[in-house]
Length: 367
Ligand code: UT7
Image: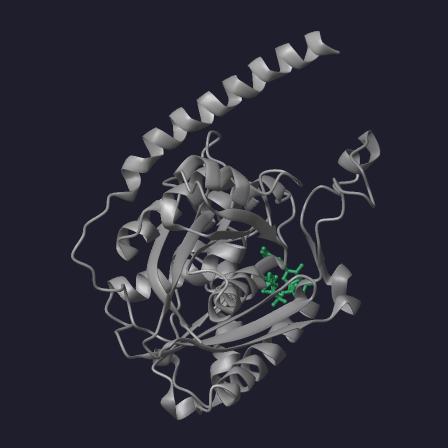
């Protein structure tokens, strides 16, 4: 049975920064309160012309560059987003088209902020089963579009960004060692974006009532998060036959510094084992774990051979953890340039659209 290794990683974060002081001009809050209660100092907000696919494509290309893998080699793309481009088609399909992943099947999974853990595990399972060799997993958000900028309970928390992993099959032991996935739908209304889908299709009333914005019972989510982060970490470690003493780094979902601190206490682990960057990005939902991972790699906090735990929680309610032995890119003599495929991808997409149009003209005549 092949092992599933994380061989590439990339992020894309929009440039515009929104500080706590900026938010204090919009709602009744202040920098001190936000920093004390959440640890957040600032977050990045997508420009009007940036969408989940825009950020996702950038993150995927960077991940493919690290893996030294052509988009045409990808068998599967799983995108996860709490702010997808559309209900459907899948954001994964848009990314597949734009990066030129010509042979990949592409779909989205929805597990809110836990999405990246679930998606990475699904991709790893597909590789472990032998049915595919190369997968791209991407978490991408422009959540700022779904935040009520008049609600101080939520608008201080979220930010935009994207992160991607390449997973590849290898006979060499390592890579994803174990994963646990959990859900509790009885807590569905604790964190919800109610309207715009089947239950509350968009109407003047849903817009008026603010049902197209994130709604959250902050305290309930906080209590749930502090309970499950440590539990899921322990479960995943046990499945991998490891203990907390074996862990080199924990990369948690970046929602609130106090939640991470509480998890560290529960696990009796020092805070310096935890990667924390919530101060500069806020909660980027599905993108928060890969963004924190890439920063940790850049700072040398994660090295080849390290045992790393990724752990997350979110709406659903959902939570999960994954243990990986970090191995890095698979060595290869050839050098590929994944970014160059984008030009061909654009041309290919244009030609396919044109052919579809022409086909439509002829089939109309036949009818
Ligand atoms: O991916 C998962 C996403 N969600 C989360 O992770 C959220 C988890 N929850 C949290 O992080 C915290 O519950 C919050 C940061 C959202 C809120 O912190 P809290 O310590 O639970 O505050 P609270 O809601 O209990 O509010 C305490 C006080 C209240 O005033 P009173 O009733 O004590 O007078 C709030 O009205 O703080 C007030 N408050 C604020 N004050 C200044 C609430 N939001 C703000 C604010 N600025 N932004």
